[in-house]
Picture 1 (cartoon, helix red, strand yellow):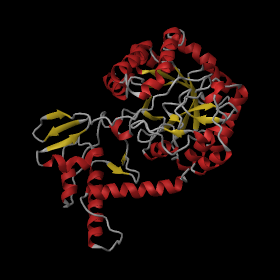
Picture 2: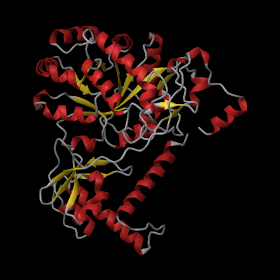
Picture 3: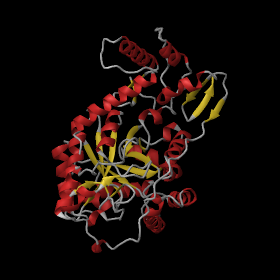
Picture 4: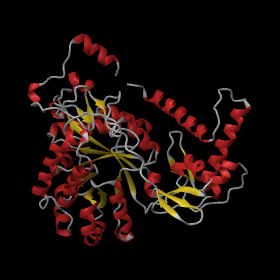
Length: 468
């Protein structure tokens, strides 16, 4: 696998090239060349214009706030890392750190030989895969002999990348190296783990991340009660199972919109299983009433938070939020029905009843910009590109500055919320970009876990591992 420092340098250079192309210039390698001076002037002017709006662009291309963000005081958690990279990957974690998220949420599972790895799904297929496209249970894979054959999957194209999913130790080391002082790692435990395995996980987190820089979460209450005995001081978050309505809606949406999508085909069996689980366990897993919240507090013995599906939270917020505040229990929300539904539900909620934290599939700027924007300060420069940026309305989408030239002649500009607006106050909804065709990656008949092996001829194995 590419060294992280090398990756950062390459990506920084790549983002700089994107900035330069936006200025309609050809980059030169000699700093004293007149064209390069022009490009540097354009970049500097563009940065000044963005600063007048209260933002700056990082070397990795994220739009960050210069001062306090306008975001309803939410604690922002990046769901499985940045949305710009394969979920739960090292690159996704680095990018979420760069984007100034408060918390980076990841998922961990145990392999057959008791190694903690970073993986959301119980099986390979959607999130990761191998060249034979057969699904494997994570808990049946031996890390020492077989994990190196897995690769992350690009969710936009369905193609496998060249990156091996990280072990928890590797991700913890990466997070610790790049994190900012305020940032924490939310380690969601997916496996039903033994006390010994949980002790090892807590030890690894302590060893490689450090006290107060991480916390645990899980849908399995048993995991958290065991962890409380292991580490009496650790902060934890109990995750309530998704709403039955949310699960059924997810199933219906997938069937309507992706019947021929191989990613759906690979996961429809798991989806049916999850749907059955939600229908069976829906009532007994809910703690979003004051008396049930007290029961949860007794089991977790304090110092914990509570995570709910936004659909559940909307039903109980009027009672739950005051009760949680009185008990000093932080509330977080998530959604399995898409980021837009989550965001719109939060916008519709009274400010006093909004949750303390949100787990989102968006950038900080993309999410916070719908809640409010900093006041635009006067721009004193004369550069035409910067003046164009500075003089546009406050709701200009700074993530789409490269589109300005395409709309300028018609007096249009790209606005926050996926709209195309006119300077004459007429707005248009932008037609979504065409979806890139997904290659046929449908999995054949599923084999029992015991009936297959990932082992190969030693010579082939050696060649494959050279490419890691």
